Length: 339
Image (cartoon, rainbow, N blue to C red; front, side, top):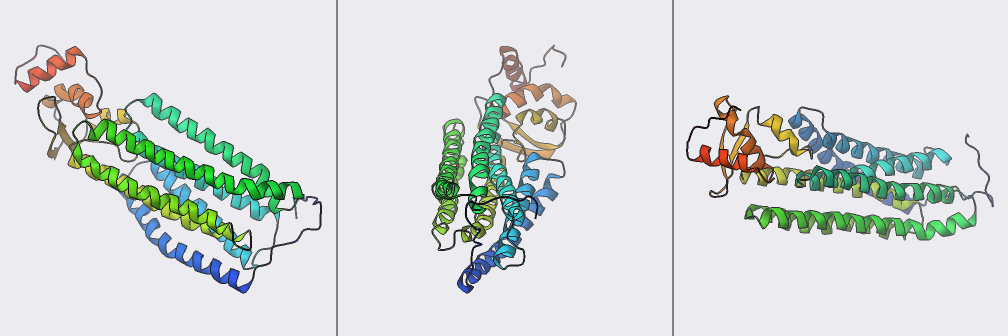
């Protein structure tokens, strides 16, 4: 079957015992059972957002990658499809989707709480390049090793495959640590104590997420070197559910604290459009605590305050002119400026 390739020694296809097939079937069955609730959660999020969102797109691409990865692996282990280059190609493609999408979902979660758009942009690009480097290295080493091109690829892959998993584990831990640092620095330190819940929950999910990476690394020590692939869909499905739960928690805590955020994106400039539509109005000033105001549309009379509102909601510094207008609005003094 195209493409053809030459091997140093005659190709020896992996042999799967009854115990191997039983293990793979058990893990795949658990993945399907847990995945049902993850898909249901994703459907509810999609219905709730009611607009195109990169966050929603990443969720469905992540699920697509896990489905492709799992189906190819389970069919190959059960000898439904024969060994060929295309098995490893589709597994590699699905793995790239899994890795890139999940990392960008984590970056999206961090970006919700980052005020500087340049920092958000560079964080996204930086992680895209870093994970892309790992993807490229695996494509160059893992596929030839699985095809048994020569013994050199096999030896290098034996070391690099575990190294790559460890690199991702460290990356996952670093991103979650960065998220905790932002929450503590910009929110908890500013007096929004309700965000302590995010810190505590994120500390728990760090260990849960890292446990999934450790599970994959541990599965690589099984007698059959291919069996660990079936653990990938399970691990990344659990990770995806963790990220969707974190998204819900961020929005819940933010609304309870009187902060309007975009739960499905990282562009805080969207607030300028949100302030012209029915949303939770928030009143934040230097002298009063944050409080929620009833849900209602912003009227023309209220639009004078919008610039001040936006400045405080997204946590940016405001100009002296905006500060003067804020004081006038607070003291119910009319202003001669035309907005």
